[in-house]
Length: 398
Image (cartoon, rainbow, N blue to C red):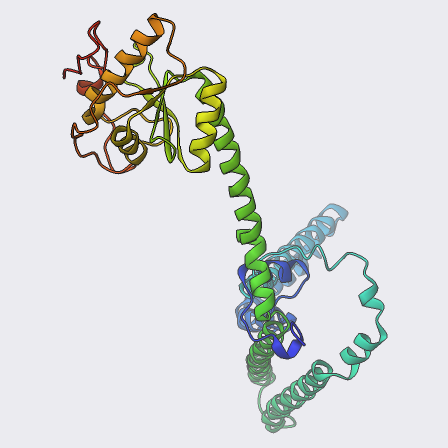
């Protein structure tokens, strides 16, 4: 079945790993911190014990001297010093153990809040899942791990005790017996901690394998997540279509404010708006086919003059985008058309379709395709524009 466990062959994505952390699915062995703390304690205890024996000796001598002149204040002072000393020792040892435990825990997966794991869920009451946890592979591993730990610890303790047997009942001084026995006991403690740490490392590897298997994804899930993060192509295409339609509607609406529409005569239409105080003429609408027909229709409704100039209309449509100024190479040709429209408007006969004052045999300069030409610089647009003279034939100067 698509999306089933047998099809989950893909590695988890960063989003899936993040969700797994919220659900508490993190590879982590609780025993790593415990055994690491025990190892640190076993290494620190010999020096700490030696220091405490010396301090106990000093305190004992002080207490014996205090018996010569006993007093309540002196007894309270000695008791307070002893209590403070024990508190400091326990605080240092406990802090070291806690820091090691926290560091070991953070090293296995960092700090995280399993927010989803604490939420009530009906899945937690599933008897089938509960039976799998009790009798499944995880339960078998926990049993094997416990048996392995007991065997290893028992063997190490037996070796340590066996090495102490020759010291019992011998003629060795008590101090030697105590010193040797203490060293052997700490050695056994260190060996047990090291063995436990190795087993905890094996347990961590098993936990990583288990969590990795649980968080694997199918190819279908990866594709669905990609769609959610990047956006469904169909939805994005629909959004783009709406945006283009809205832009097209705004462009068609701007035709009513144009000064002239150059047509080809039916296939291409380019609407220009010229404001001398702003600069060169700007293309407010441009299109071919159905869009061109709509531009001509709006121009006719708003009495915007249309001029038939096949080469100029094609050149503008090819070289200009909507909202862009016309290229400087076409200033002269556009100036003739604008002068012609202005003269017709002065006579009150500008609306409708007119033939261009230019001869279609006049060659136009080559202009780059829209998007490939540079915008005119200040030197090109600051003082020059296709302003028509009264004769209607004056092009632009630089």
